[in-house]
Length: 381
Image (cartoon, rainbow, N blue to C red):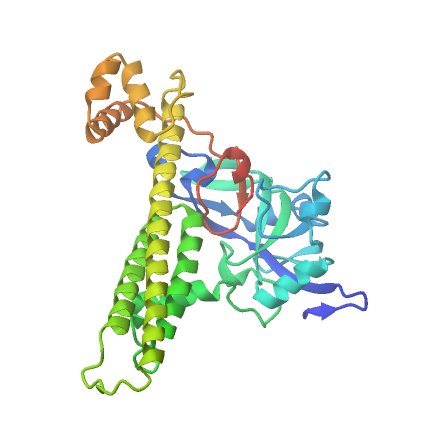
């Protein structure tokens, strides 16, 4: 079915929403903590499970949303605010689950058409997992909603059937392509002008915002690369604006205009320097928050009797555990360096098993997102 407009302005199309086979999740998406949080766990959905009448029926009438809701689910209380349409006529085609999509919200239709978003992602009800010979299987599958996303976990195989799709985050794609070797040359190999470099800086800043919002270790590593590139671009731009050409004509005609341009670029450089510093500070804060959250999650699972109410940093969490063991007193822990506290905690951590609540959370088929609270993880992006 093509992208069809109705006389009322609605859109009717089709979508492949999921398929049978194995799919990888990060441990934290399944409720795992500690060293298992960043491990990739394979979960399989079989064609038999997806083909069950009750499974297919659970998808019919589900709301269609733009991205996953922040709280991960849609219900009767918030359907009006979250839904942009619905899906129906869910059926099996080969090893895939297909459906018809009815888009009824004008703003959502416009957003999909302008951004080119076509991939979809299912938000599930709480997942029931069973272990068969060391392999996890998702059974009694039930859907909660279907979301339009920039990148689905299954990739472009699961998408709305409109062949006019294009990447949502074009500036991010351009920026990452730039990081892979474009440097200060354009596609034809010619040197970029100062204006073009400023454009590259703008693209990188957008990329940095997107990476910072993800909060994963991989995204943080990429963000560091972006920051490095921003610094390099700034230095290159400064060199282009303050270093006169070797064959510069000593004639001062037009000098006022040239001086004005240089002054403007120098001012812009100063602003960019402030922005880079601000972004570096934000990244440092983000990394600290991420470490605190990961450490607290792990500690709560391993040491449930320890009170962490006053622990506002990763060091404070580790210190509370050290004191609770009575191997150290409070004064001794305070006198320890961060590295010493971390090492002592690691030693105690190795002897304590993490309790898992695997399978108690909702799945969604969006690409791995930052570790969130249990409520935020329920099918949300």
